Amino acid sequence: MQDRITELRSLKDDVLSGQERATAAQHSKGKLTVRERLDLLFDEGSFTEIEGLRRHRATGFGLEARKPHTDGVVTGWGTVHGRRVFAYAHDFRIFGGALGEAHAQKIHKLMDLAIAAGAPLVSLNDGAGARIQEGVSALAGYGGIFQRNTRASGVIPQISVMLGPCAGGAAYSPALTDFVFMVRETSQMFITGPDVVQAVTGEKVTQNGLGGADVHAELSGVAHFAYDDERTCLEEVRYLLSLLPANNREAPPAAPGGDPADRRCEALLDLVPVDGNRPYDMRKVIEEIADNGEYLEVHERWATSVICALTRLDGRLAGVVANQPQSFAGVLDIHSSEKAARFVQMCDAFNIPIVTLVDVPGFLPGVDQEHHGIIRHGAKLLYAYCNATVPRVQVILRKAYGGAYIVMDSRSIGADLSYAWPTNEIAVMGAEGAANVVFRREIAASDTPEATRAQLVKEYTAELMHPYYAAERGLVDDVIDPADTRRVLIDALDMLAAKHALLPARKHGNPPL
View 1 (spheres, rainbow, N blue to C red):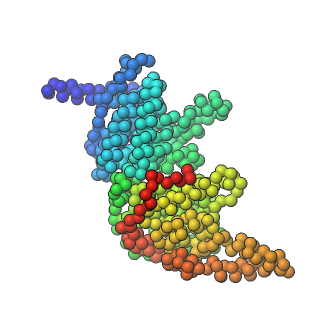
View 2 (cartoon, rainbow, N blue to C red):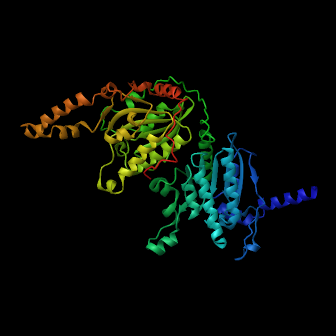
């Protein structure tokens, strides 16, 4: 028996060593090996590997002569900040991390275990797509991964970390997960590579220009986070995991940070200009409200007119959706609507209360927006809010005009509580535009149209846009001192902590995808 144990240990040692040349090549590209990555992700000594001795059974095309252990993917579980997490990690040194039948079956098993155990799943992706030599068996393996990604969606957090080139089917699985991390220069995602693009369209483009981290973080919105190196990236993955619940049956872990719940935010009195046309940085508002000024922004560089962030309020995790007046005046457009909708859905799936900070002039007008479906994309955000059953609190800082006011979690679509600052203006549109529509005949008939317009704008504002108009009609629960915003939000979320709401019985809704 002891001889057999020694033999098995020797086989496992072969998996961990004997690849010096491939390891050197990996390091020369600025990339870590699969074991080094797992060491950075998990708490020291906590990782338990399964099926480390697995080999493929394919024949032909020289495969029978190359049957390395692990078959190019390491699977197992460990702890991150003391909480169980499952992970699979491609080993680019073996078949370029390409997915074959045995490789896929290992991933399928791990995903099934993660779902059964109710624990987060992290994939460390560094693979060249399907293993061509195994043909349709490899493609079927991807199908099994996609099906499990979908089954796990909204049940356990799924995080994809892109650490190398991921093409074709290797890019679809990350797109189905909750968060995508990328590393600049070394990771890429695309359906077809630069060579195919050039052959079909004649366009010349590099791998990074086609599907690098900055492309997906700024232009496509595929990547939620982008970092300069793998170590920083994996440390941020650990931080995100520390915020999220293990599954949809649990509340996010609390972490009191010593920031008083009743702390007044006096700086807010000067941060937000009374003049609705003057920009300011909504991030500074979030910093004032959040515990110790800390928050994690999601999709920071994509669709920047809306901010989506995870933060803590008196130790309790909350998702923040906020207009950003510093970017396109905080309007809702196609991309920002989609960005906020996906974030709201994620929060609702994992029991994260939602705080919405409103300063929105409306939806972005324009032929391009209309032709590309602003109605459909705006409806995604509307649907996400209406469908959410977690605690929802709205704060209107300044202006809230038209349909965008409704969509930004107004009381009329189900916000549990709505508060407003004394500077708020809630209306169908701005006073100037409204006066031009309502009083166009009076203005046209006046001998002094500009003076008449100014007077009518003043009257319209005083009658229909004063700060207490919505509160008088029960659409705002209270008009609050801006300096009390943190305390009011914490009190509201504490009261709503036990909220229980059920949607009508149905197989599923039909959102405007």
